[in-house]
Structure formats: structure tokens, C-alpha cells
Image (cartoon, rainbow, N blue to C red; front, side):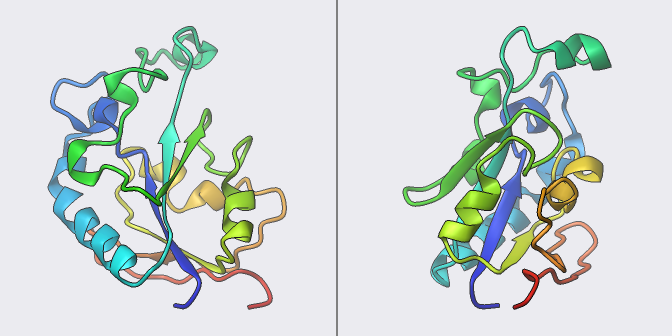
Length: 164
């Protein structure tokens, strides 16, 4: 799809690496597939946007949900895993909630880049809440369908900006 962006969601050390505070071991099995998706998007000149869980060290989320501190800004745990590191020209958008839209610059970034469709490997470590629903909490909900390149299930669906 023309004007499509690839979203890489929460592929952070604190979710992916062995022994990480919120380790999701299954994510390691799809890194190669996500890498292929990233390489393909870049080769086609499509934007690659990383949406990354980011917290202050005293974030109330930790006590509210009983989670250990994770993805603390400025720590190695908050960095994208080495195999999927952002390249120059990629966009990294921090998020402090499950949503990739709420309180972030994602929607503004997509509009500035003329993006009309989104694609995301459905392998977010917390995919039940983040992939594909970064769109769930978009205030204007401009996306009418979602294209998922699922390295786990191989399912593909499509999401395009309304009116496109």
C-alpha cells in the first residue's frame, strides 16, 4: 500500500531479553520476521515508526498494576532490542500507557508523513493491548482498517485512513 507506515511496538529489552522484568519469551521467536518486515519497509521507502513503552522510575503504573519497574526512561531496559534497533530516519515515539495514540505524537507524525495505512508485526510483547489497538484510543480514529503482518499467525488484515 502506498503511504503505509510500519509500526514496531514495544520490542524493548525489558520485555524481550531473558530475565527481563516483564519478559515475554515468545517475542524472541519472531525477531527475525520483524527484522524482515523492517527491511522491506525501508527498501520500499515506507516510514518505520517505533512505539515504545516509557516510564519514569516512580511511575504509579508499577504499584497500581503490581508490575516491576520496566522500560524506565534512560535505562538499557527501555531500549529497542539490538536486532531491531531504529536506524537514522526512523521515528521513535514514547508512550506511557497501553495506547500508541493517547498522549503521544503518533497521530501528528502519521499526518505529517502523509501516512494513510498502518502495518504492524503482531508481536508486541503486550499485543493484546497494543497491537493493533494503538488505534483504539485515537481521538479521531482516522484508520478504518489495519494491516497486520503477523509473524506468529501469518494473518493479514488491512487498515486504511478514512476517506482514502
